[in-house]
Structure formats: C-alpha cells, structure tokens
Length: 128
Image (tube, rainbow, N blue to C red; front, side, top):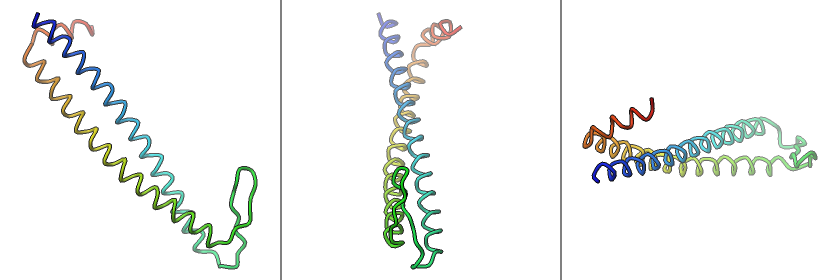
C-alpha cells in the first residue's frame, strides 16, 4: 500500500515538474522577445536622435507610411523602451518564482526517491 502511495506521489511530482518546466520555458521565451523589442526601440531611438528636427519622419502602419513629427516618433520609442523594461522586470520576478518552484519539486523528488529506493529501481526499469 505504501508502495502505491509513493508511486502516485512520484507521478504527481513528475507532473508538477513537467508543468513548471513548461511555464519556465514560456517565461524565458517571453523575456527573449521583450529583450528584442527593447533593443529595437533603443536602436530606433538612437537613430531618431541623430536626425535634425526638420527632417521628414514616417511611421509604418501596415503597408502604409504616414508622415509624423520626429517628436511623436521619439515619444513612441521611449514609451516602448519603458514598457519593455517594466515587462522584463515582471517576467524576471516570474522566472525567479518558477525557478524556486522547480528547485522545490526537485528536492521533493530526491527525498521521495531516497525514502523508497525500491521506487527508484522501478522507475529505472520502466525507462529502459
């Protein structure tokens, strides 16, 4: 009976580990995307700052380009940069939380396998 309880606990922990790993990968992908957006906004902003104020600047809207004052484009890029930084901070917090969860799940799994060496042998025989 205890063997069956340990076995079900293993499968529960394994499910949590898979779920946490998926969430962690998703957050890491989101962070990579936000880093790209931040870099694009920064580089665009740097290029815009080099232009004189009387230069015609255009904003892309779909397949159309619309004449916009330089100041409007600079404000938009600054806002994108700030938004990306805020989103990255939030995602970093989520990532740290998920990493702590992952460590906790790994510890639980290690304790379960140390508690019942027979379960570890059963699991190893299932994977072969």
